[in-house]
Length: 610
Image: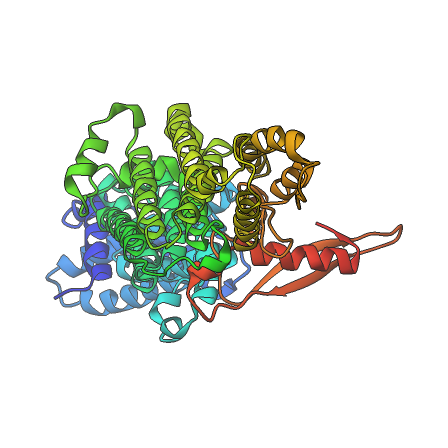
């Protein structure tokens, strides 16, 4: 089976030498060959790589080839020796032309190179093709241009053949992540500059050939190179597996590649280059499939989370809640690519519920539908976790904190654009309902123990004091994370206890010994639900989330996260500080608060400003 180069060379030679073949049986029309032979001999005898190439020499070689065809068709035996001498001279001339072609091609950077240089290369190519040296011409042209294209891609910071090496399989994800960045950075220039200019160059140099030939020359140079370049996303898909934290790199690659699709379709529009377009579409398809798979796995991970909320945490926001909300917040940044990816995404869990979401127009795009569904999955998981609390009041408090965190995260971020004001309002109403449930279940029995005017016995007073003190002790670690919400809960509790107690106290305070004044009750209530400095966090986590996003971390990553800090002082220079952020346990237990706490401590101890 003939090689691609041989087949293409034959096609080029046939298309360029038709007019010469018509002259081989008409020797009377051939001009005297003596002048052409003299011209060629003179050029060859004086030729060196830096000599100028004259158009007269090119015309002479074409004429010599026509004379050679004439001799080959002559039956006279006397023509044999002349044929051999002519062929030898033509070969010497072609050797010089091949060297000239190499020299001029090496001086071409792209299609914007000086027109004189490109015009000279085009003349050499046409001469070699028309004289039967198409294979040699194409071999030289392809080798040099392939090397040039490869070099240009390497200069963009991407190793073209990295996905061929075994070392890539052994790379840690952090190192592969760096190579993904390099690929994304290189992709736009690769398509819009390197491949585009190569196409333009082929059209200029092979302009005298049919369009199909020009397309074939271009495809023969870039097909293998572009194939390897666009195969990189497919390899990343194999390595990404089903890890949620790797989803965003796949989305970055999908967004970059899909954004370049119009340019790719233009540059590789020909039939000869169609395999490259097919490779790109395959890469997009595999990226989309991997992204959908990770999203489904993320949903299942929420549903399968079996960790019981610890009573000692006082109903605080779960790491799971922070993890999911930060994940969804980052997901919302990819609205455009996700619209395409999620349009036909199959729904596997709770089909009836998700179908009702799909038919609900208020969420609009498939992205909004998916985010609202994942929020519902999280909410159901939180409700199931709340049922594991033995203390009903604490279970309500747990729901207050976590659902309020979700609602505020949506309200104060781009998620609100997807879900709307109604979603926030509905869930804040649920927060209020859970808050009322907490106050009723947690404080009704204390309110019932309050002494009243008709009852003076000391036993009733002592019972209230005992119940009140017991509740205070039991709830020392209970927390309402949001300050405004915390005040609302305190005021509700205060309104249940203080007015009634004050009314009784004003009548009986002088008749018996009473441990608590109304102000004592009020002050004790106002000190409840206060988070400790070590574990409180902000009301919505927005500050720490913004910090993570500023550092380029959608989710905690293994290894070091380096940030640049400016040391205060008149002549201070920027310094580099590295925060160690290891993961040796479940990522749900490792959220942004610990990173923010490390940075806060570093800032206070070093006197730095982020």
